[in-house]
Image (tube, rainbow, N blue to C red):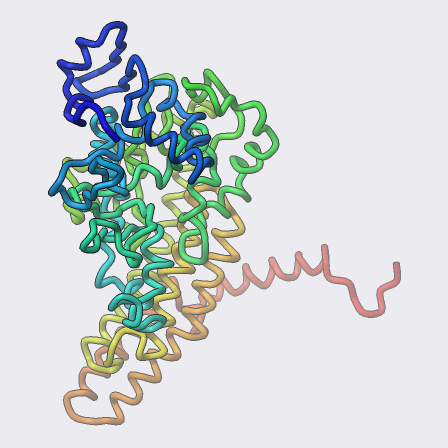
Length: 487
């Protein structure tokens, strides 16, 4: 490649001096349109048309193509920069980072870097990572776990490394994880949502786009969406929501079939597009006990956490593009009720019992070395999350049968008996361990005697027993057929 140095493409002064050039900006950064394709990018095309024609075709369908933003404008680098290597007479880097994209998309990148997505790669030391690195993995793949590379990091993001030639290493690339830690210090991957090389807004608006990561036993948002009225409406009306429109405002450009982007990212008549996926989320349902999102953001060190009440107002604004205010208010009362039910009945007492067992050395060893480690992890990390996420997106099956039913079953038939067994073994050991075990046993008993759990030990009030018996009797009259009944 020969021609002008890359600095020419980054200089606003030289850009403005080009005849006929249109630069549309809100600040100094913004969509940039070059008068013609650069010589460097034209040279890239000549080779890639032969070596990887699909990439060139994808680029040809993009807004970048129409603005003469080509390969070199995004991949160009300088000698000595992290990840730079010489390629056909020019220095380039393989991985285009948010910092590269921010030359033109400054606001979008700033919003993303202020979001939970940007912190996605900071999972080292979590129980999830312990599973991937130790329980399910080993250190045979470049000194680390092949499962971590192929599983966790493909969504959460890897910490990018390069070899002596400047090429990304196989244990960190390919990777489009949303929290990827790049060589230039930036976080994230714009192509996690806007796939290379079309970088289509329409594609990013579709629910399948989020389904790459937001599905499965611990966070099945895509499956919940599919069973919800929103998902059903989208599938029934996918051809009527103008998803290719550059302007895509709910209530103006479409009024049926909201997608994930509609609620979490896209514009309404009164608020603009955001690339901070948490701007409209008021509960953080990731941990054992749900907390408000501003508290979670502050704990992660995100700048200027938005109060959860403001986030809820922003989401209600989305809701009222299609629903009345009373609908949105009642929905949130239902959702809050489910979160508080889970928190108070299962999460808080379960966490207290589990931590009590650990503190009393009744379940020592590495994480997941004890049966109760698995039981408690699945209660909050899988079953409890499914219930909370199900309620947040109006997915009743995930709220109940895949959610709190599984929580209740595991809590009463596995977690409590396992905890009681560990307490009994601790008491039998005698000494200080017995004393600590008795304290945990008292906590378990107090939990079971509370209003939420006393049914389990036969202490339901007579009034409640009578009411339940009457309901069963009335149900039997309606639905239960006697063996000798004739049609």
